[in-house]
Image (cartoon, rainbow over all chains, first blue to last red; front, side, top):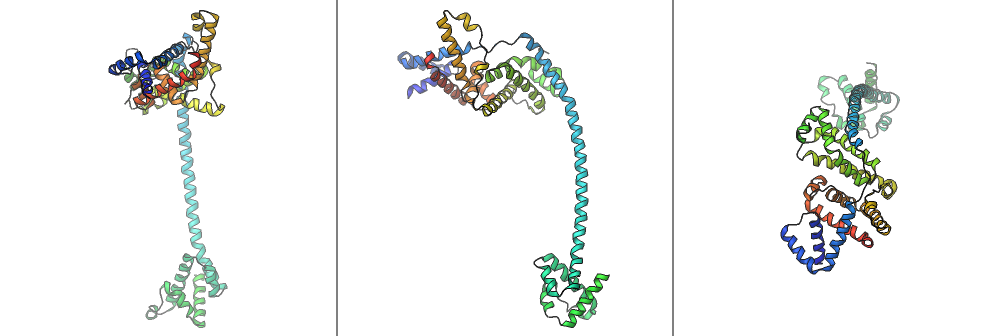
Length: 198
Length: 186
């Protein structure tokens, strides 16, 4: 266990990173420990062999040419960078154009879909009974709200000022419609027809 | 140009003086080349990586805040590129084996006193290269910088962005691995 610490000291001593105080301790240990001495000797042989490792020489011309190779790559890089900036700029305009087209498309879609439910609501009222209309509206709260508002406006418009206060809020409309008589429903239908014509 | 400091040359390069960068290349080309050569083990890849190191340095010089010196910074680039290169090679091959690419010098031949001695030395060299090559990358990087490039633990720690004690520990472990693998030859 203690020799493991010594092996670490041996490694540090090869790198000249061992403080002098510990270096003296190491030497004292090595004098009496043959195992650590042989560990150091083996490492010395490895170091000597590693220092002699040769990876082949590079010709002196290589070092002369190397900076100019880098220079050439740098100068070939600059126009490319400029070119890429131009391309990027071109693409930026393309993106602006695409965004504009998309915005126009979304705008038109909103206008179309906003107009569409109104027409559908009127068509339902003309062709089918109130039950059918409610069936078509289903769980769509926006459609139901819109339909209710149209009906309330029509009713309010046909009534006198004093009677307008009797028209319920749109939230009470389902109850209100259920309580309508047949004459009132005919009146309602005719009012809706008028709305469509206008 | 030769008398100018690295800091000055870096500032000049940032302002568009490519000749200043050429001087930095001249100053560090050998050190960088030799470092990447120890990683790759062959001149073809070492040439590519050395060039790549300087190109990357040039491209990112504007982002270099000069908190460390240029020497540390460019070494860091070269080590990172080398490590990435080795990782990629390992993925491609399953195991990196550059031993065949190593060129052997005449040093061993000239110092050999007998055919047996020459043969043993050559065998040790071969096994040593294999052993260094098989070191875990973190140990290998520390070993190359400290042993082959003569850096202190502090300098290597700055390049590798770790603590001095980590470098010290990695060196110890690298030596342990080498001596275990080379035991029959030492």
